[in-house]
Image (cartoon, rainbow, N blue to C red; front, side, top):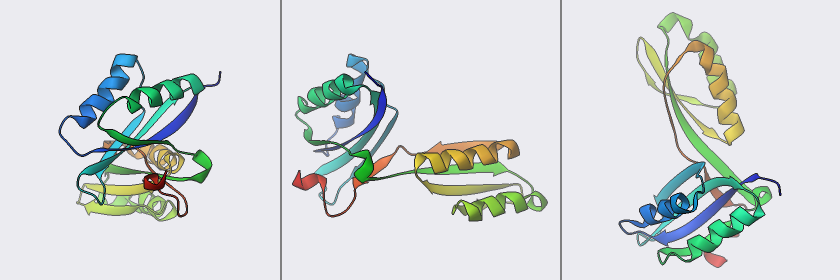
Length: 167
């Protein structure tokens, strides 16, 4: 069977310990989480967890079955990669003096990133987009010397009028 990346979207109770129980299930079963993001929904009693992982069809099925057993998990959706908007956010700090920034500023414009902090000796850039776009920008900046990097996990939502609530 072929191993592939997949994205699960979960609606869970917004209570203490839920993330521990969800991530603990992955650890107990020996499944790896490639990316994870969590945030409250429009309903303060509910949070949405987006998990990116890798595995064949059997592993995907096992993960979903194990998550369904957790009482905190209300809805699970295996996101269709062809019908999903996926984004991640990177904050990248580059130590670069004022006179040496023109190439970086040009790349920022091309990649549609933005400068969010500027000092005489560094600049911090924010970029959002698909994983491949963020990786390409990161590779471009590496020769300049990345001082610090923060990145969110992937977050995903279905295209069009379909919502996780009406599944």
